[in-house]
Amino acid sequence: METSDKAAKNDCQNNLIKRIEPPNWWVGMDSEELQLMIYGKEIASLDLAIAHPSIQVRKVSKVENSNYLFIDLLLPHTLEETEFTIHFSQNNKLVHTHIYPLLKRKDDSANRQGFDSGDAIYLLMPDRFSNGNPKIDQVDGMLESVDRKAPHGRHGGDLQGISNHLDYIQEMGFTSIWLNPVLENNQEHSSYHGYAITDFYTIDPRFGTNKEFKELSQECHKRGLKMIMDMVFNHCGSNHWWMHDLPMFSWINQWEEFTRSNYRLSTISDPYVAKADKDLSVKGWFDTHMPDLNLENKFLLTYMIQNSIWWIEYAGLQGIRMDTFPYPDQHGMAIWAQRILKEYPNFNIVGESWINEASKLCYWQKDFPNQDGYNSYLPSLMDFPMQQAIRHAFNEEESWSTGLVRLYNTLADDHLYPNPMNMVVFPDNHDEGRILHMLDNNTYKLKMALTYVLTTRGIPQIYYGTELLMNGNGLEGHDKIRLDFPGGWKSDSINGFRKQGRSKEQNQIFNHIKKLLNYRKKSNALRYGKTLHFIPEDGIYIYFRFSNTETVMVVLNNNTTGKSTILLNRFKEILGQYRYGTNILTGRKIQSLDKVTAKAKSVLVIELTSKPQ
Image (tube, rainbow, N blue to C red; front, side):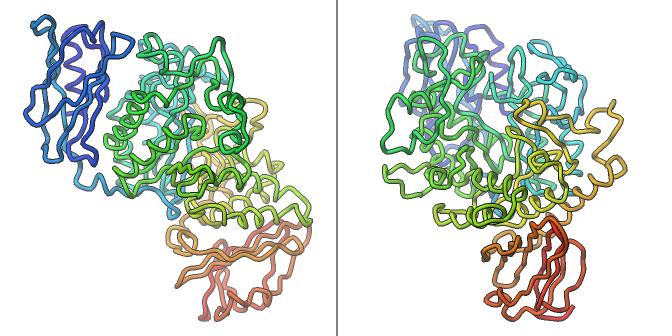
């Protein structure tokens, strides 16, 4: 039985109960508590009883809108897979019953392994990746249908399209995929990106079904790919079903007139902040069609926590990427993160905290000793300071503070982070200009940037199409950086999923990523090793990743002309017993480590050994 089938059948019995969420739950969870939100016409006027000897109703909460009830249940750990009946009555007369399923968890569910520095993430936007099922391009009840000519419209990518091309993602060597949000976005326009959710328990039917999302996740697991789900707690879509009948006034952050966030995240950690500035940052709306959710409301917070757990359990997720992590109530977000990690101790969550200074970003990583006592309990962060360094380093002339020293200085700030190995390193994403554009459309610079991302500490993430030299200036509009993947639609004349459909330059970048990632899969030094780096000199930056059994040397030559011969005596403190090496990008054997030669705007990745090759 699908987890929501029985709940859907119940709700069809009459029009009294419109929704019960979560639609089901599981026995054997770490927490014995479950809160049901029940929505129906004047539901608060009914009496409620649970028919099950082991399940305790701890509290029934009526709120200011009589169309809602919140029921707190206690599900003992001894409970086995079962179902229970909720009886609704009025004046001692039974008017409705609802059968609620409690399912058995998979045996290894609580111990699932989240993504970590051993993984490499492929980020893709489902609507722009591949159309595997044209039959769902237009769905009854959905306000927007497919129009590939509309820059901000839906183009028809779907879950089946992703499933059809998992081989492609695997071939490059990625071990995790992060999908931009796939939940229902039933908005009148610009619904393709997924960040204006209108139903937190339903996959957008233009992408597929809940069942298809679960099947995609399962297929990924079979292939050794981890599924990371993009979640949004800061806001929902203006057409979310509850926006037409809010449970209570405080469900969202209300203003007398539309008030936009000032986007100043520094206000949250600022010890001298004016309350008005902070409130505007975290309570202002992102846009007119994105109401700002208020996680200070305890019912909403519980709803969102349970929603995350529901998707982890239902779809077998191994990671969450939390959009705009600092913008909702920071204390509510900390409670959420704690609850997730208590339920799944080996899980991982990466938060989008769009802050470019390490001194402010570190505030948001779990266990940073903040002066105000705040702990986010967020394990992983998107490394925006590193991204900014990458964007500048390969474009600039070398000086005391510009060029490759930006990479060096950014890593030198790692003393601020409780766990720098759990930072997600990325050159670009769905919100900013494509890295190729930022590097002046220079593929030599792109190779250098990609090499750094895939060999430095942390968890690398690459945005779809980077391997195909997708370009775009994000300042000209999001449509410029969210192009359709060529070959994802049957009518496409070019198929980038196949070697013969890619240009010579595209295949060079594709093969560069493929070579590095597939080597990375078997390299403990790159995946989990320590880092030793040396201050860049003469346009050359050299760093080492090493474990107890393996050492890899990376050479970045940022000079614009000629070749550079690098004497290696300076690096003797780590070269030690090593005398030989292999360039893993070319396969060339290096018979002496006295010196190496690197062309301008090029990289060397050398696996070191003490034995002759």
